[in-house]
Length: 213
Image 1 (tube, rainbow, N blue to C red):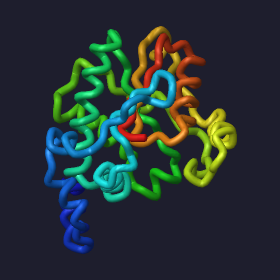
Image 2: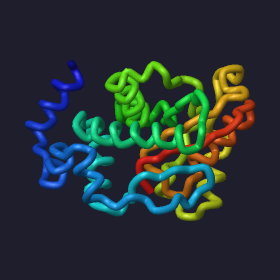
Image 3: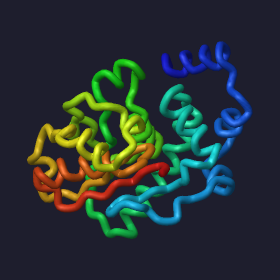
């Protein structure tokens, strides 16, 4: 209830622009008809759904990530939910653990929420997905790092994230198939480091599903 009130106040103080209104008034089917799908993922074991370069995709993710807009969150959550179902079936994934990429304490304090975790919780709530094992505290970001967008070279991005994630309960991960969720990937460094941390404690298989690249 408080989130909805907060959003209404923000909409009054900072009215949505034309692109933002388009996003918030579009259902998933309509949205997917006008935005480009990602053709191939540039990274191993990573599924990318949309092309970030499209203005509507960028706008939707901006509303999700920086404004906490409920309509944009629901739109992207529904698209993500359908793709999770598809990949589980296509890749014959058995009883996966689904983990949103965590953010640092400082970023969480600054933003007030983890946008990827918020999408996962919306999927869980709206679809009554009791059959899927969502875990929100298994993977933790234990180091503050520079913003990846500020680092140009891929090698430097990988070094920046080395050892940034830890797993709080390795016994839950051992011999399980894992789906890692994120909103945007640029070089794949974050997802690669998350997968490394999960494999290190015995994960059987790790794939990533990302909204946009």
